[in-house]
Image (cartoon, rainbow, N blue to C red; front, top):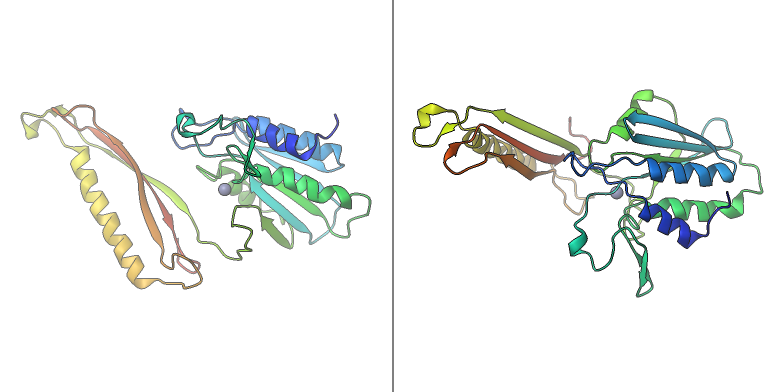
Length: 267
Ligand SMILES: [Zn+2]
């Protein structure tokens, strides 16, 4: 197959849906993105290896040149979920307006792979003294299972890495950690007229949330790193699901939250 031009590569990557989400009804395979990248990079002489991390979820490791050291250009192949109604155009169709390209994942960050190829094209005539590795992971927006699988495989990837996350084109050399965690409480449902009929998972979760917010306050007193725009560690209560009716004791409640520790904190 012939390598499509830059704009078409952008458009194809955006048109290939690859939502990853901790909510199962949103979660999709990233296979269409990985297959396209592997085909294009294979065309350019890269050795492509796909790693199936979970059913329908793949990492791609594409390399050119061999030996120790080398440069890694890394990104994630998935996007967050979207609400098509809130978009001014189809999120899966590349749209050009005001000298910009719009589409889900154009900036964060499927577009990066289209750009990598553009950057590499003029260099392919010469031999590489050290390997170039292009890495596309899965599930960065949800479980991080792709990055975890790579870390577990324990293989050295390169001497330096550039990650194509959007930073307004400012180099960013350090990053907070991130953990996405969940707490699920199982109580006992029952009719609301008598609290003795059950145990409210929702009320127990209220206690949990209080503890988490107190923990956040403690961390934000103890840790501070002025190199970050937000100099303290953060904890965000992101979503909660529980119960079904006002006149029923809530039997089950689940909370999901993220934590972004500073370098040096013990996860
Ligand atoms: Zn991203």
